[in-house]
Image 1 (cartoon, rainbow, N blue to C red):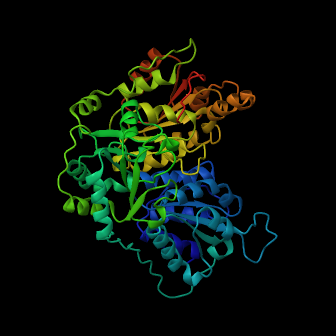
Image 2: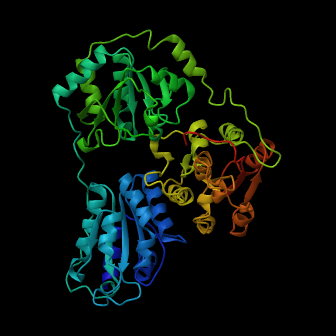
Image 3: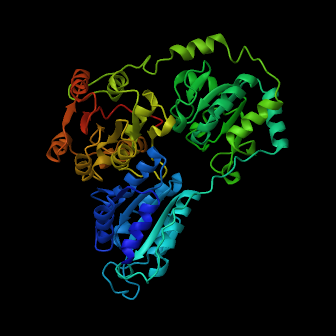
Length: 539
């Protein structure tokens, strides 16, 4: 048995049946063995960076540890941004990377892969001997699942083709240790309860890490007379509660912003509190902020807090409820507030004006709100265009149904993450919002989408520019033309690569396009030419 065959056996033993990647000299026989001998599905990307992003999208939507593979040298180097995104998101992902022979430093594709992997993925597991290959695969999977985060499993090309020493080769699946819920210190519980007793206008704000604790946080809000809010990544967590303010942050809607501005206490649960959640200090500027998190290092790391509680969100909420007598705040949890939240319309008061050849992006998102299926996975890429769906479109984030891979601020993420999400959750259609500049950094992945054939609606909000840069250049007197580009027929490009595509320039055309594309049974592209002068201040 060759080492690459032993690695394939071990990978499959860890429950892997889908691998993303791009073939090269140092990984092609591993991929061939996974496909031909084990029946693994190989999703071939057109770019290594996109391949790792697809794996990341797969992991985020499915909850499984993802696997990708790239070749040596430039194969790993190109994937650096995607690995950094996965590291910051703590995505469980194993990247099997080929490497040049250690004894050939003059190889044309040689570079020192270990420091690069540590700087991007953060964890590096080398396969250094044929006799340890299976064990090394297990180490990589354990690290990816337990840290969690991406791991580069490094396999030199000459070693991959070596023979495994005689003897049993047993690939034992790694069962990750399930951490026990972290119980908060009783003194911290009492201190938080006292803050809730004395507050006049408290808010409980939940992030993605608090999803399993939704019921406990809701109960604590009812007991403590608090209103509820979420980060964008936990949108919809408290849907149906009469005092759910919705998303807190730069993308808060008017009534939410007005209410949060009056808060005197904000308690966050499992939320990566940062400048976006606080809208650079514009929200709850007069409130004390207490952060509840299982990671002590995360408390106050990205935004100052008054106090912190180290503990599991659910355990902490239940513990505080147990020592807190019911508090009634009818002036805070008022009937007027509940009535306002019940009828709040994100499009109310918006004055939309479409040009003859370009639609106001807000008008298009209003059509999306009317027509898109509620049961979907929503992916929003990075850029000025992302502000419109995030602000105006109700996209539930529960059950891994919302992906916004903004951790590294890298453009070009929308399409590959959508492909990975569709593979990870084939039971739901995917709607992905992407910009023209962002798409053009990885145009080849339109071909990947066509080949995969998954139900992905790619919505291209095209302003013929890097809209974020235009927005920032002009006010300071710099030439915004530096960030503008000629119009391109991206629908024609999509059709040339095998995808059905429509061009949208007005609301009537948008409705016709949705009539033809829905229900979504396969990939499709809506090329939406939007007005470039409509600015989203808090994208």
